[in-house]
Length: 318
Image (cartoon, rainbow, N blue to C red; front, side, top):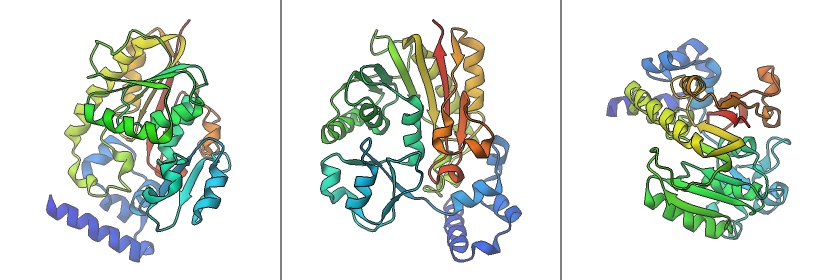
């Protein structure tokens, strides 16, 4: 394993110094382990995207993207359709900025932000962030809801919910309740929600441009175990969606087992749900995909310049 990690570092440096020396075929063969090609499409575009390194994305408060760019400098808005996603190019420690402590921005990848936009929660609604972790997506949902309505946040780890508590206090997001949930059939609340987000634990293949060592430490068995967890989480959380409500599944991975196969398994067993089209045109990737909406989409790193992300959506039949 140490040898593989050293190889990854050497490959990264060689690509940085001489990217033109890598043909598409050569790069696809060398950029990931052999088992990955069996689990997903390994295209030259994706290989170059993950080998090219990561970018630092910020999420400004709703409607404040341009104001944040002016305050920070060394920052810009890459997509006019996503005006609160700010690309930061500077060297400053952003955690020391007064704007960060005032809750004016969060450090959040653009693909992660896309999940919130696709959820499209409305002020006054009730939502459940079923795998909230430390709260990155919950903070975005709260901002989109104008701090109105209610969001339940759950996770299996108490320490993550404690970090969420500190983050929400800084961001002044107070419309939430937190509860432990182990992903089982016993749900943390009997509430029925307008929307449920299951941002499931996954292999993290979508983040490999920022975690190149993971290409050699992640194994095929990890994917197999996680796809069972994802399918179970989604089925249990679905019980909390009210008639007419939304169910959103997201994962920062790209394998078929953790994305389209999870969707197929859900569709085969949950007849009370129907696929719901997502407004993908806002993401600025619809033209390249030849579509304006879809019930599930894969956002590749080369699409937005961030992580890879899969998102699927359903609506519970009335």
